[in-house]
Structures are given as C-alpha cells and as structure tokens.
Image 1 (cartoon, one colour):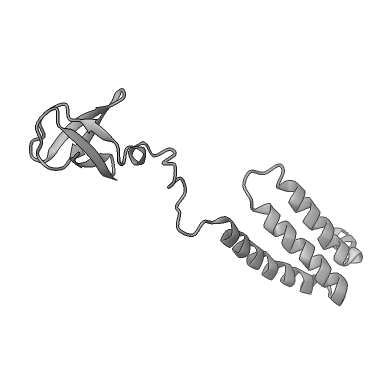
Image 2 (image 1 turned 180 degrees about the horizontal axis):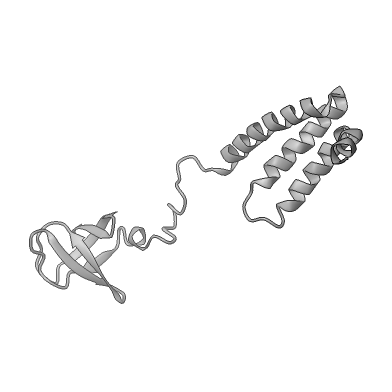
Length: 149
C-alpha cells in the first residue's frame, strides 16, 4: 500500500522525501541528512522530467547519495588543516608549543619536569640546570620536547 502511494506520486514523492530528510537535519546533529535530502530532491527532478519508475528512481537516488555525500565532504573539509590544529582546542600540549618555561630541577639523562599552572609535565631535551629557561618545540604523546630558550 505504501509502495503504491509512493509510486503514484511520481517525482513528487522524492521531493517530499528530500524535504523530510532536510527537515530531519534540524533534529539530528551533524551535517549528513542534508546531503541525502539534496539527493532525494534531485532524484525527484530527474524522475519528474524523465518519467522513470520507482525502481530506476531508487537507483538514481542511490547514485546521487554517494555523489552528494562525497561532494559535501569535499566542501566541508579544509585541505591543510586537521581538526583543532589552529587553536589547539582540547589538546593542551599543542597549546604549549612555542611557550617559554623555567626548569624546576636539573635535567638528568635528557629528562626532567616543568610546572605549567597546576600540572606537572614531563620534558625531554638537552641536559640543563635548574632555573634555565626552556622553550617547548613539539609534543610527543604526553611528553614535551624542549630546547634552551
């Protein structure tokens, strides 16, 4: 019965489906249903212009879903930037790169610790005396790699 009603609407059924999917984007987090909704709208246009059956329209919809999701992904991803690379948001170690700190104790074996705010960080680098100014150059896991400032 539902299939008969769906096929009786022709291309308009795809337009309705597209609008429902786009409306569903308001309820669901993320940006995924919008691309499926656009694919359904385009399928409605194709089905309306060419007068194809629901089976062919379903195949057109499947192909347009793949194309629209890939195109949407390409439009929304930045090329040279991984998420949060600019701000270091949610990556405390990355936020420390380039900052200068004072070494609390003499580094032995190329390892030591520094205090940043209320936390203590493990550091690796050249052997330096306590009180030396050090600069964070990169992060390796939970360890800061430093050099003399």
